[in-house]
Image 1: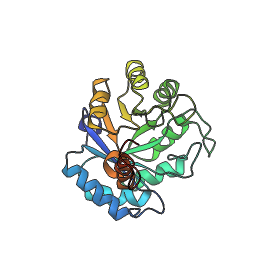
Image 2: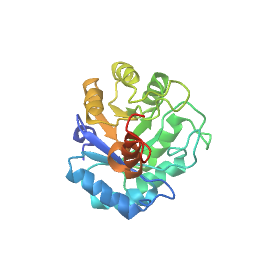
Image 3: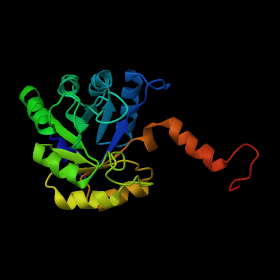
Image 4: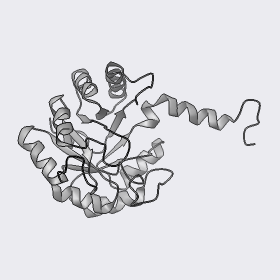
Length: 230
């Protein structure tokens, strides 16, 4: 499977649920992934070893896998052990924190990528938060870089929608494919990201997180008995 070509100009859908949520079940996430593929998703992104295992058996598109461990700092596939677990579960691409922050196991990003490649035939996507992160991730050997962490690492302000300014800078400055990801909540924003030069666009919450989507509509309607707009 040529993953890079399979996702060129296409939509990746992130299918994740968080601990304690009703949909937090690997089988459910695999079904959600199947539903997005039926709608045209060219690849899916899933979190958790069992989610990767169930999803890779359920869909015939590339699976980008990761493991979240913790809530702050480097927590997206933070160690070599996490990366190997994702690869062994069947992911075609291992997504990991691609920032320049210290990693929990003391390895550098380059050491993590090199060690993973010694043991598994997978691509690596680096989730970055700044232009400097993207340059460092490319130098470390990442096959793709994403704007996933823009606004979450203290390097850039948290934009209301996707950070298109960062995306443009990264696309112009690195030589590997760039995935636009992060706060893409509408089809217009997805199209704008692709027009900015992204190789592919990844959307999660706006497609696969019903709790958040529902809250958007509830907030738009206002409090019970309160006229919309005040």
